[in-house]
Image 1: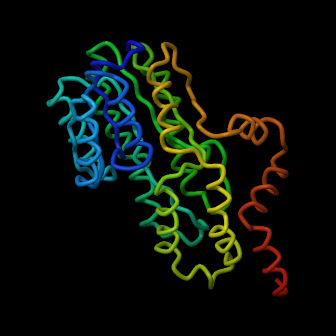
Image 2 (image 1 turned 120 degrees about the horizontal axis):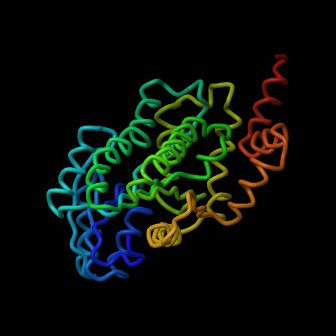
Length: 300
């Protein structure tokens, strides 16, 4: 792929808000003649983004889709190919976070987490690979998270889904290299998007009686962490710039970290500090130490 994205066809999932919307507008404004396939559940929100992209000069196809439905993901790829004749780059951005103690999350919530964050993107990717191979090039960028490299309390299900995306990306990067299809992962930290609101709603749905569980203190700490994380958060536009770099780099890196101090954090947590110290840090950060004190005070 040329290091210029002009005249390219780029498919972005989760394009109605947050990183996906910011990326769509950035590409439309920066690259004359670009074609965009924008997919998300809310067609109304998509149309608003698409209108701004068209005003900037982009050719835009919008598709309403629930990415958790693999048949819908396959149909999305087919619509894009039928409409534009090719897809040069796929940005698997759609996803959400399910926070909560693993013990309390029902099988239904676990299944949807993996359907949205892993199985849908995989179906979409698989459907586009033959077309990319035939056209002689392609880029696949999977939006993961620092949580795809580091697991932490109350984030186990989300991290597991992002760990899966990381593993799939590593495999695809090697398997598709003979066909000039390049695969990269972008790993944001906290981002100022509706993502945190979705997390809060998910906690309320999956554990409505969290205050009555042994994890009460950790759930209370989780509510207070929002302000702390927001101070460290990047904007969607900042993350979108990292995605554009991954798209344009002639020799793309396997991973791009989109978080202040993210490289240092990953290095310390995975290469330097012993596991028990990492565990202590995360347990204090997410209030598991408070759970232990409360439990012990009951004489357990």
